[in-house]
Image 1 (cartoon, one colour):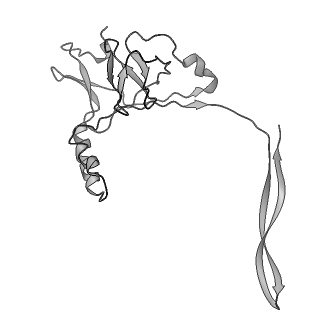
Image 2 (image 1 turned 180 degrees about the vertical axis):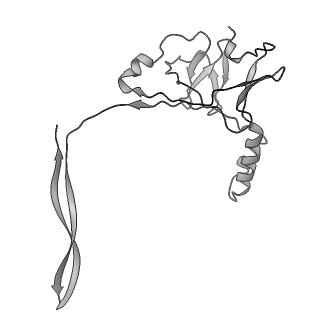
Image 3 (image 1 turned 30 degrees about the vertical axis):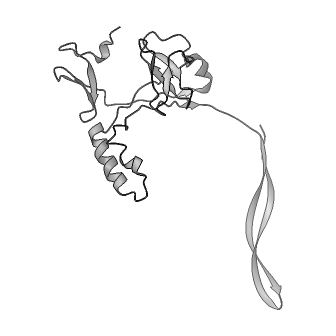
Length: 194
């Protein structure tokens, strides 16, 4: 099934995100399509969680859980195995499928992958005690961007509590014929009950 959102209107080729221009760019003819500049994040009430949780099987993607790190990973339905982008362990499609709460939107990358190499190289040069494996990480092609989903839920909660509050005061006293001061705390009860 072809996704028309990522197809070029000019030649029908695949549109890929270009972080430099913050737009979609056709791999074949170079046509660019501007993305919406306003990003909105919808807040959900906590009691909507079960309703929003997607339990039906997704026709375009297979959702699996990595047995090593527990990450949720989307895989194309025609792929039977792959690597976890988080821990690099092998993923086999026969692993259990999980329910998915889909994000409401997507915030695109702000840095091009070529720029990541330059930024990482400058950063790691300043780390004297960085292990050699870390210093050669980018050259080995092991740095890659991943999208991390997150959700925001609102909830109102009430609770009863009791506590002690304290007010500090300075007190003067005499010891061995000399005047001295000390801080004394006067404690009082605090409670809230509905």
